[in-house]
Amino acid sequence: MNGIKEDIKSIGVLDSGSPAYQEALSNLSSRLKTLQDNCKEHFEDEERELLPLMEAAELSTEQQEKVLEQCLDVMQGTQSHLFCFFIEGLLPQDALLYLDMVTRSSSKERVASMLLMVVE
Image 1: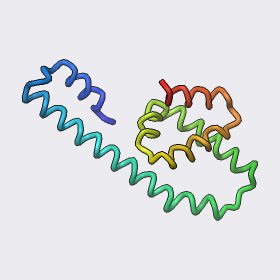
Image 2: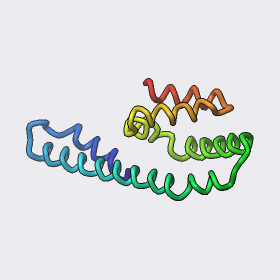
Image 3: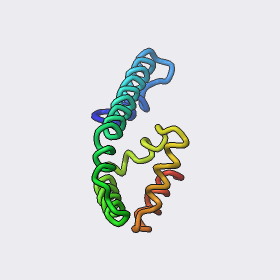
């Protein structure tokens, strides 16, 4: 995400027909593609390494819910501004699974806040 917001702002002030605009747009597109690839790789790493450990731990339903709450707390505190970007990058069936998981949170305020980000 380093510098992407600044790139977007700088594109906004350029003449849309200029070569500088086209170059800046191309550079932004490349950076966003790299970010998308890095996120995808990160999620695949988690699925390959972290999720099998979670399954092996054989947590009770109550323990799973506690871990989910802790994960959502961390995500909301550090990465909530990326939530829409994340959801938009998922395949529809994966987005529905993720949103289903979020809605199981005991914090209805958090659920409402996250869902509002999706629809706005």
